[in-house]
Length: 245
Ligand code: ADP
Ligand code: MG
Image (spheres, rainbow, N blue to C red):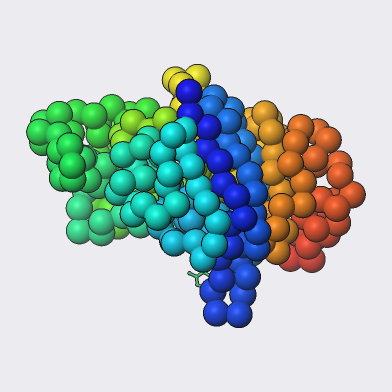
């Protein structure tokens, strides 16, 4: 049983305080929804917790492990994985190679046939098996996001951060994807889910944490949180002023 805990996380980019004293936790077994307006710091928090960015301040622990100063590859070894909001495939490889190759290197490399078999399993899980041998540039954005998901799942994580994996889908695809996320969770993976669509988050999450301008403005039961005045003002107020993409 491992809970992820983080305290006083600060991250600046030049003059921008992307995260400003963020405290929080991800309990073993839950689905945490992480929401907030564009630019509120959701991706930055995932980047810091996964070690992609180093925090300027704060501490991060996962069970007994202190993750605060660990590089990303060591954090992955503790059981954390994440997708990138903007997919980062190896552009010269096929879909199958993108998912299998990372697992042929590193501290515990898999033999290539085992890595490919595991990769194929996760490509099937995400519905991409028909594209396994296609070059990356033949995949659309939605497929690239699912490729990110397949790659993250192939790492066999205990805790997975999903950064807008379902964005850009039509309503039928969203319904299917919600079921897929439920299956991932049912397989024993703790989830942190960032999604633009409030419906997706409230349907899936057992708890919601809301960021606004780099600070936590609410954290708790989804129904209570999404009706909180500060959340409605910050989240919905700003959203209504921008075109939904
Ligand atoms: P969200 O994911 O909630 O939309 P982000 O975490 O991407 O928000 O961004 C939070 C703030 O940090 C924004 O002002 C954004 O422009 C800034 N930011 C994020 N990443 C970088 C970066 N690599 N360089 C400079 N500014 C960044
Ligand atoms: Mg983001």
